[in-house]
Image (cartoon, rainbow, N blue to C red):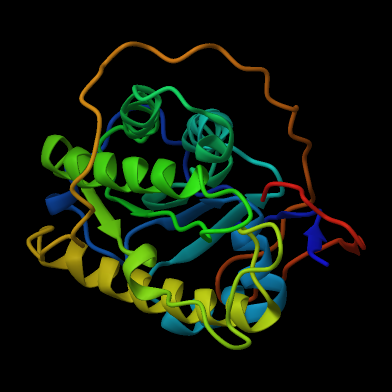
Amino acid sequence: MGLVIGALVTMERGDAGAVTGGGPRARDRVAHQGALLVIGDSLTVGATSMGGFSSRLRSLAAWDEVVIDARVGRSARVGAGVLARRLAGTVDVGAVVVALGTNDMAGYRDSAYARWLIDEVMTRARDLPVMWINLEFAATPRPDRKPRGVRFNTQLGRAAERWPNLKVSDWNGWFTPRGDSRFVADGMHLTATGYRARSTFMVAEIARFARWIETGGTTTTAPAPTTASTTTALPPSTTAAPEGTTPSSPSLTTATTTLVLSTSASSTSIP
């Protein structure tokens, strides 16, 4: 049995100045400037609801404020649009964490899609510093998904060479599913213990990301696997479910999280 999480997590502060154009390069920014924007899917929702991600991130006090925008079923393709809208909004975003790609690789077989997708998101990020958490699938029940995750992670590593403002976070190398900290039956979602592990990982990596920004982006990015396609054709078009809106809440120092959780006896949904 799997846990289906249906939620949009939003934490933000009010009018801090709209971002209407490209800002300074990543090396010209400091970690404490502006807001940290975290864009994710249900893995981030799970890390928040079961792993205390939002409160643990708050304790870092590494940015003036934090916005966590995570929704069940979100793809990176949809996330690119979310990112663009956030940067055109009233919150002055200084850095971005992207925790997306699982839904895309669960459904796409096109070998060119991963590179195209990553570049699309990075283009929308303008020149802001970005930390992207890579992917991991269980070997079962869909063994075809695991090599797609490898392909995506490889392309992330290569993208860091093209995009100097990109830091890759190696969830795939860090998480070793065993015991209570593991995947559930769908091979993508995690147990409650697994979500706590993901929360621990994300908070530690975001702390490193802050230091990476402060030092001018000079620390080493996490290594990626070495198998990948070099095809550059554009991927086929898709139709994504529209995303709704949720109430906003105060800044990092007083942030609250709104979650709606439901359970299903036979869940196979994608995060």
